[in-house]
Structure formats: structure tokens, C-alpha cells
Image 1 (cartoon, helix red, strand yellow):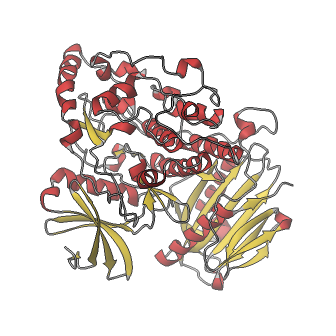
Image 2 (cartoon, one colour):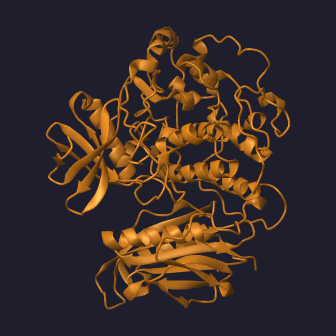
Length: 585
């Protein structure tokens, strides 16, 4: 198909990856003169179910386009019998390819990468989307250290999205990273993604998945029934706090896992700040687990000897995870009887289309699954994961409360801002570092932005002509919770902001992550009424977070509501947030 033009706009130039039923191409967008990645379904791969999955993936990712940790979707369309989705062309390689080439990274990198995955999941869950297939092949690492989540093709959507279900008969996923409830077809919500994230973290820390290289059926049994060996037993030097968090993510019951992706991100941020240069030992699969370096309770460590024999019925029992729907005995019996035969063909059934470039191609196109047969489907329980009311309104998980304690120990005391920037690569071309000692912060600023004092708590930076205005505040002893202030601010905008704006529209307060801590933010679009640009449509993004010491960091950006300004403003905001350094009072 090289040279073929889809939709009269996207000229396919180079095939960069392929899998089960799809092909990924590098393409030239003739309208906007940019390089994009195009995932194409055609021929035998263009089945109705595959087309539905591709459209679902496009809608899920498009709804999260403001999150820098999700690959941006630009377009979705049909050209004759060909169905395609157009995405940003991402440079980098998947964590799957990284692990194959270099082995597990250092714990600090592993923690940071998974923290960024949680930032993507936090946005997805708040939007009513459960990914259901978090694994190394669906996470891409870009050259600047940014991590992006890929492939929402089998995501669960809240019914409010009005999307067609994938299938009445299958619960899909990838066996080494599937949650117990996903395997059982039990009620499932955002915490299923947290279990898969725990599997990902475990693999990055140790170089192996929690239950090793087994056949699909054995993996299903292990996820549902077997305890996990603590990462610190396989790789000495991993902090006890990281062991504990990993094992909590891998809890069999969703109720025993952390409550939200934002909570996990905050805990990973705290662990990352404490890691420093912790020495660890590379994972050696032939070496037996060793005790030192792990503070995992004995009850969580595996018993000696081979895994216990398991009745296949255990896999079919929702009670194995401590919850879930119960079925009449006749349905449970039929479901269990069908399990053995169904599992025998799972490794080759290939019900999901795959499009991950092979390990030799790290060009970083929008990659998804690896084609090693690990992407499998478990038989469903009779409950439809896409329509069952109990299967996840992914609890736009209750936002983490703003810490109010200023001393002591425990979770609140750990929630303090780091004193160094999270970004580690050199500043992008055309940026400078501003040292604002009066406001106790250093942050990167585009070279063509100018700064001015604000009100003693922060700085205002304006782009050429003042089209983009970014305000950065850093304050101590803030009496009011940041979320409360944001709610009041949003209400003020909606009332017309004292005559300075009209027709203000917003989706409301949402959870965000700033400097590894859970915060809040909102976006609002409105007509300006207080400047020479009266009547023009403008957009504001406001984000803030307060730590355990009542120290607050706050960002606000305002710009004309056009695609060009939006793209630059978000990029500037993201870079500032990643690179800011705060100083103690």
C-alpha cells in the first residue's frame, strides 16, 4: 500500500510494523504537512469486530489527547474497505523492546516510568475508560524520557460513552499481565488496571513477570491462586516500601489494592525521591530467592515446593477474588466444564488484532502488542464486561484528600514536594532556565517568553505578543485546600469572572499529578470581554497541588482557543511542570 492515499489526505510512505490483523504505516498528512502514524485494517484483518475495536481505540485515546502520557489520536476514517486511525508519530521504543535489548532498568527508572503510566491511567479512569491491557508492549519510552500508553483497543468504556461492546463471549487480555477478576470474568473496574500495572512494575524491577514463563493455563491459575515472590527477594537492594507497594498492586482482591492510579503515582513519587542511588543486583533467573533486602511479611512469600494442585473450578469462581457476581450453579458448572477446552487453544486463538513492530524496529511508531502469542482471551463468565453494571464505573476514584498534617509519620508526612526537577534530559532547543529566587523556584521558560513579578507568590510569563500567558505560583502555609480554591475559581469563571468573560464552559474539576503528588485541575473555554480581543474564544488550564507541609504549587495558562495555540501552550505547560525545581523557605 506504499504510496496509497487514505481519505484523500494521508499518504502511506513506509510500513513500520505489523501484527495479527493490522499494519502500522508512517504517513504524510498532505493537509497539515506533518508525519503521522496510521494503523490500517484491511483485507482479512478488516472484520467487523476488529473495526469496532479500532474505532473504540481511537475514541478512547482522542478523549485523552490532553494527557501527554497517552498517544494522541488525530483522525479516524474509512476508505472503501479500509478502516484506519491516524495518530501522532512517536519516536522511541516500547518497554517490551527495551527489556529485550537491555534487561531491567535501575529501580529509580522503573519507578519513574510506572509513575508516568499511572498519570495516563488516572486520566483514563476519570474519563470512564479502563485500559485492560497494560503491559510493556503497550508502553512506549520516548528519547526525552516521557512514557506514553498505547492501545486502547480492548478498553472497557462506561455506558455513558454509548460504544458498542467488543464481544458477548470473550474477556480479552494478555495472560502474563491479566488481573484475577479479568481472568474469571468477574466484576472489574479501574483496579484491574492497577493489578496489570503491578505486573509491569514487577517486570521492570526483576526482568520477569510475576509468575514467570509458563503456559497460558498455568498463568491463569497462578494469577488467581498463587502468592507472588517479592521483587526484593529476586533483586536485592529494592527498598521495602517498593516491595510493599508492588505486592499491594498484585493483591488477589481488588479491595486490597490501592484505591486509584493517582494514589499509586503519589506513592511511587515518594519512593522515587527516597531511592537515590540505591544499589541493586541484576536479576539472575538461575539464582534462588534470597532473604536480605525484603521486608515482605512471611504470609506473602510463596510456600516451598511446587505450586499446589488447583481445581480448574477455582478459576471460574468469582469468590476467589473476594467479590464479583455469583451465577446459578448450572451456569457455573457449564462455565467450568468449558474452561479446559477453551484454554487449550488460547495461545493461538488470536482473537485480538496485533500491530506491534518487531523487536528490531524501534522507530517508535504507534506500537501495540507483540506478536508472541501472549495476547490471549479468557472465556467469559456470562457477564458481559462491556455492559454489566458492576464491571466498573471505573470509579473516577475518589480524589486523594489534600494533606493537612505538617509533621509526624505515615502517608501524609511522605507527601512532600521533591526538590529537584523530574526531567533529566537537556532542555529543548529554544528554552532557558529561570532562577526565581524570590519565589523559591527554578523553572524552564521558552526563550521567546518574558517574565514579570506577580503578587509576591509567583511569576507570569508571556509569549510573543502576549498570546500565551503562563502564571506559576509557589507558596507556603496555604490555609485553604487547593481543590477548594480551584472549585471556587471555576465557579467564578462560570459566573462571568466579574464581567471579564462570558459563556464559560468546563467539564469540572479533575485529578492531576504535579511533581509526583496528586492534585487537581480544570479547563475552561470562554469569550473574553475585557480586552482588545473582545468576543474571541479563549481557553484556560489551571492545575494545583498542596503537599503535607501546606506548600502549594500552582500553574495557570491562558491562550486563544485555536489548535495552533493549544498545541504550543500544552507543550510549554508540560515542560515547565516536568522541569520545575522548588526550594525550601
